[in-house]
Image 1 (cartoon, each protein chain N blue to C red):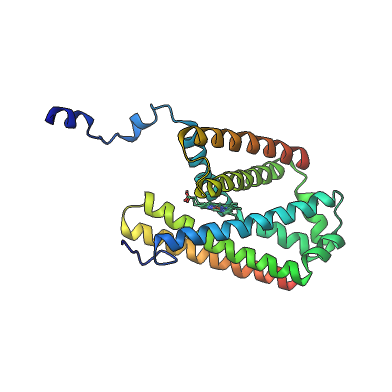
Image 2 (spheres, each protein chain N blue to C red):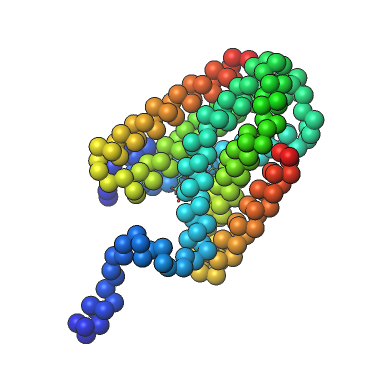
Length: 115
Length: 131
Ligand code: HEM
């Protein structure tokens, strides 16, 4: 079996599974947000804030964002191993993605718990 | 015998002639899934900024509405959300095919058509919702 140190689950099969499980979580999250927006056509700030700051939604949002991070990491890993052949460039790209995703994650947590 | 194997040997083609081929629809929807995923990734900061502005205070909420009323802003948001929904729809098709449904050639064609029609439809709905 071919293993690769930069893959998330240490094997293609785990990565494959992680990408699918996280896709389902993010998909459900998007549907919940869309459902809420459809039910409130003239959304007010109070309604929106009340919805997003319930403990359940906060946890679901953070969970979904963790899922996005894992999903995108696997996705970008796949893309970078497909197209970027020079090792230093590939690793730089993956490093950049890791830092960017981490920063986005911290930002998301600050937004959700800051209000 | 030898001659036959030689002729059937796969050859590499360069990028230039690659685009001269007519790609089957499933190939197109598949690469669009990848591109749309990349676009959504690049747009995560924008989406987080919107989330931040929408939640911080009543002021920032109203500022956001103001800011999002311009054509360019709406267009960028429309493009981002269309990419997200394309990725989601094609992703669901992907998951269905992973379960072994529609894996043959005709199934792949039908699936690609369904993805295309549904995502154009949602892109139109998103446009109607934003404008
Ligand atoms: C914030 C949202 C999302 C982002 C930024 C994102 C990004 C990506 C990226 C960059 C890839 C790699 C593309 C490739 O390997 O060709 C990918 C793959 C994938 N995505 Fe997403 N995605 C998101 C949400 C979703 C959702 C909601 C679903 C489905 C319901 C989904 C389903 C999939 C599937 C099934 C794959 C695997 C494709 C493959 O194995 O070829 N994604 N995603």
